[in-house]
Image (tube, rainbow, N blue to C red; front, side):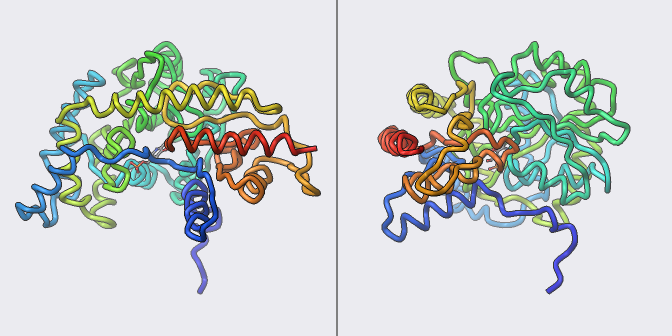
Length: 397
Ligand code: PLP
């Protein structure tokens, strides 16, 4: 069958592929340590599960409004007010099947063929592909661990052309864990304000920050940006609800309306009982986040210390999310047996093959000098996996 031309640039999500490969190897009885996970390894808190069970028992099993229930929109609006000091009306909010779906709808809603969308690298794997699916051109701005994996206002200014339609900001970032301070956001807002460029602020890791870091939305820092910003968030990472598929976006009425119309012609509403569970997540007790954070924090510091002790590796201390993103280019050019490690794909392949450790190659995120390791796995497995990586690197010649 002839496949549509728009699929030319589209590949399956490499992060999901690594996890699937590690799971398949485990199913064959191979002892693999998987650092690929893009989801918390904790169960969804019980009060959230109970809300879904109650919704099911009450027969809340039919279509809901396409853009989400008023109940959940109220909870999202209250969350924005409580956590971000942002005021959104329900008509300026869309509930989707995950933040990923909100982002997809947004790109479809605002990007025309040939439009440019600025994406800082390292980037979450789906942004460029979603841009391509909308016919747009991703314009990548490079950042490195030397600059804390953050773009400067000058870089953004230099990347803007008359065709620029959107700018993606992901703080804290997947894959680097880097997060922008309020001052840094202020400086970016100064460049973007009044340009008509839509700022897509992906804040999905907002709650997962460490060392007392205060995570701020760029729209909170510069409220006038509200007219040209779409804030995207969801319950997946904060409440360990990845499988429930509930995310949301808030922004200008016309953008939200267009996104809702796309949703009405594609998925319709997100799952009814998952919406009820998300109301409980957003309105209920928030201490479940802290419990998760404490475990993540312990793993983060342990992992960064161990990675930095490996010769040829150098690891940035992430401010947020649950990933480390070490620069491993110090081992490039070395050999594992007769195979030369010539980049992150080679290293990830050799680690899986020889050391039985699954990591994601940095090339997937536009940063070939790095690999991504998630710390959403037990400390015991982190220790075991790092022992294997360390031993493997010692064998390189
Ligand atoms: N944005 C970023 C940066 C992510 O890492 C992810 C998930 O990995 C998402 C959005 C999508 O999250 P979900 O669709 O589960 O809400």
